[in-house]
Image (cartoon, rainbow, N blue to C red; front, side, top):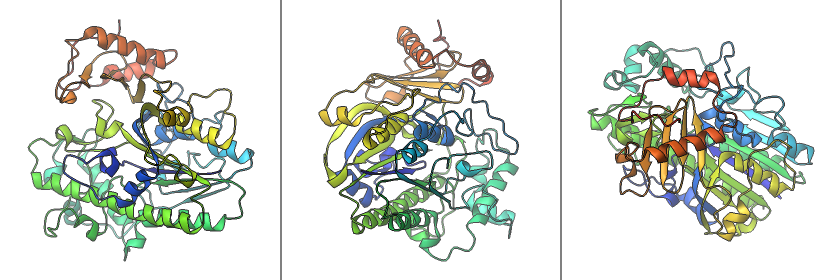
Amino acid sequence: MNIVLVIFDSLRKDCTGVYGSPPWGTVHTPHFDALAAQSLVMTRAYPESLPTLPTRRAIYTGRRVYPFHDADFRLKGDFRGAPGWGPIPEEQPTLAELLSEAGYRTGLISDVYHMFKPSKNYWRGFDQWLFLRGQEMDPYRSGPRLSQEEIDHWFPREMRERGLGNKTLGVVDEFVQRCVMNYHGRTGEEDFFPARVLKEAAVWLEQNQDAGEFFLTVESFDPHEPWLPPRHYRRLYDTDDDAPEQIISAYGDVAGLDGGLIARTRANYSGEVTQCDRWFGYFMESMRVLGLLDDTMLIFTSDHGHSIGDRDYMGKRGYPSAPEVYEVPLMVRFPGAEHAGATSDMFVQHHDIAAEVLAAAGVAPPERFDGIPFLENAIAGSPGKRDHVTVGWGSAATVVTDRWWLNCKADGSGVLLHDLHAASPFAANVADEHPGVASALFATAEADARGGFPDWIVDLARSQVDAPGCSEIVARE
């Protein structure tokens, strides 16, 4: 059986039609919806650790990255996005390596530039890998540079003056400068990344029809910011061509921000999602034409979502954690669309994808492996082997059970507890009303950390400012 893994970066679960709609209304995803109708749909899927690179390390190896033991990477010249932001450890075999050894032909098509920086090795084991350059801060172009007026057009001053976290205005301006500069020279939709990535993935399928069995990974950085879709996609959601543009996050509080800027951001993001959907449809049609739909398993997911005005925040973060960032879409289309229309609410995490890929290929996992195959239980309607998930991001941990959502720092402070049975679970922090629950869930986070949190993560937690509205109780006993 062939296996295709498709990952869209920053695709919100609620922007994929089968899972509903975001707060601002319907996002048009007819091809994602068509996939859902032919697939087993997992309704409670979560990352293992975040953001971009820790997520992919877990997916590619089936090993837990949380709580970032031996993951304090400080590589020269590299952006240190978060704890765990580094290469795949040499002693951890990857899916591509294991499947290649088992006779699979392996391919990787990606524009996620973080995976291909000089210090990284996420292409390990692939018989062919193709890196499409020019996303975000990739030094793809050095000119012509934008004027300050042009920068202000794409990232309005009102947005720039919001909370920018550790980013100074100069750093943000340079980010916009590089992003837009890299987009110079595009004359049609096929020049944009979703088209390029998914067309190249289709070409790989066409060129590798002689493979006995193959494993193809398709990584689309879109709909990650900057949100610069072709105008006709943005106009599906906002027809005002003269409105101020807004293409990146403030990574801060946007309460009181001009509602038009938030609406424009949502329109640009929604346009990116619909653009990704269109070219995913192209890829699926290529699979149909090549006769691959009856002997190929396709797994569709995202690394995380993105807050766009949800609870007055724009950006993504691990503390406080939120469903629009932490809950991810996960759909599995079996060969011949077997089990079409089935759903499962069992807990599943990113590293379980690796376990399922190996199981589907009949390849034994390595001795040290954390992922759990889930499809057999999901099809049978079983609750599976997980009664909770633990997700790590930086110095914070999130634990989700059937009823509770705990988020706090690794030293047990700054506690946020949400009752998922409440009408509006994230409207209130109920930690003070349920201190025993908070302590028990934090003990679960520590147990999943296997040996506890590294000292450097605890030190990082102690230096981190408590989230607004957190409890003064300390969950660590």
